[in-house]
Length: 263
Length: 312
Image 1 (cartoon, rainbow over the protein chains, first blue to last red):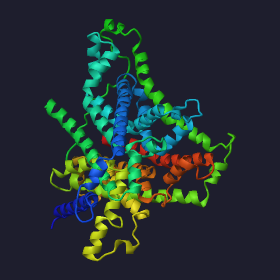
Image 2 (image 1 turned 90 degrees about the vertical axis):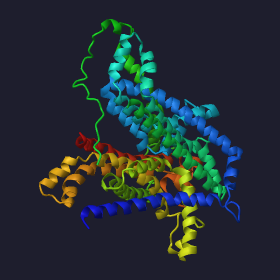
Image 3 (image 1 turned 30 degrees about the vertical axis):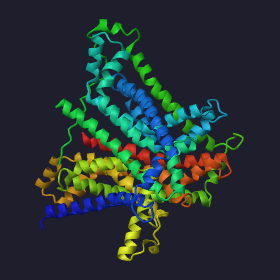
Image 4 (image 1 turned 180 degrees about the vertical axis):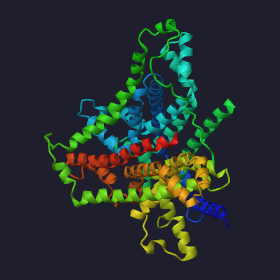
């Protein structure tokens, strides 16, 4: 057997072992989620979960939070990436450093800082009422999404000729806001969508921040069910996995749609 | 092997003065372009200050204050109690183990699909799955492993009924150091695959050909050419994996409740109910975490800058 064949067999073994490690827990979870009725496999656990009003309300709350996070994130990141690319390249290392910070800083540290800085007896008492706490939660999610959102938009921005597009807009008499809204945004739409789906996947089941800010999000609901029920958590895990899968699938779909359009 | 094409448009040699072929058009702005640019990036910096930097700095300041706001080093000294040190220590152990194993296994998986001669369709499959699995963390991951390797989980039951092998009599417990590490690997390995695949793609074919022409064996090529080039990105990725599991909380919380005393769970309990009976000691606990992840990620950023020199 020659070395090339040997390494090919090694590669297959590595791949199969990896596949087993990743697929077996999914099968195990699915099997477990069907066990709610004593003598037969059934989708009873899914029925219980999906008809639980707390499931619907917490999932709805987190979905809304994810959408708000995406909007704030886009408004924050797109103009920044644009100006860095076009006029302020010297700030690029600083902006990149800031966008990487949330990977450095554990989420629990960030939210702990909020609780100290924005508590109800502070100068900016954001946690004093529910609506402003929601806003604070959305901001905390923006920080979590920042590394992914910025990278996605920045890559999209590099792939188009920002300078020429801007000059073309200027020659046609457009002001800066018009250029951003009508020229730059549509051209980085795919990048924004990728960032948005990734953000959704991160935010939907987030636990630490929602729990410490005491908001009725999906993450704390998962924790509650996990601590009190036997089979429903598995059903929820399968649902969460499907949601994550859908987000990643949509990223691939919008990405490849762009390629076929170009070709 | 696929060759990556650098799609980055070549930057103009010098940012220099912006050419002004159409001065008339520029007048329409009213205010200068630089001013627009600064206004444009201002919200980002204000946001970063208010919701990322100042809250953290404020925690750090709290670590150096006593209950009345006077400067003290007492809180930092109080970190060196057996309970708190043990929490840091088990967090570091789990993070190091899951980072090293994740990096090693992730590297070989990426290697297997990039250059292992496997069918081409496996690569996009692995990449998509890695994207999903690296984000499949937190509570659902804990539920999945409890359903699989918990006391009544599928694998535990199958091993017992079919093979007569009682996993839990070997001392294995999902609510333990190895149990947590095994669970964390579920998102660590895919993250490594995602980070290291571009680096493997960056290995130019010519380097291998050149070393073969010069008479190098495969082993020599890896030891003297490929690994030194990959080293900064692999080590950097490992450090990122370390920080990734060091800051994780939800999975461990759902798996072990508070029975495994890792530092994030201790901090969580402190924030909820002041279990250390000293607010400022809580800030010091946070400072310790910032120092540990900061150190590992500072090294990562530095190594990345070095690694990118080879990518050109």
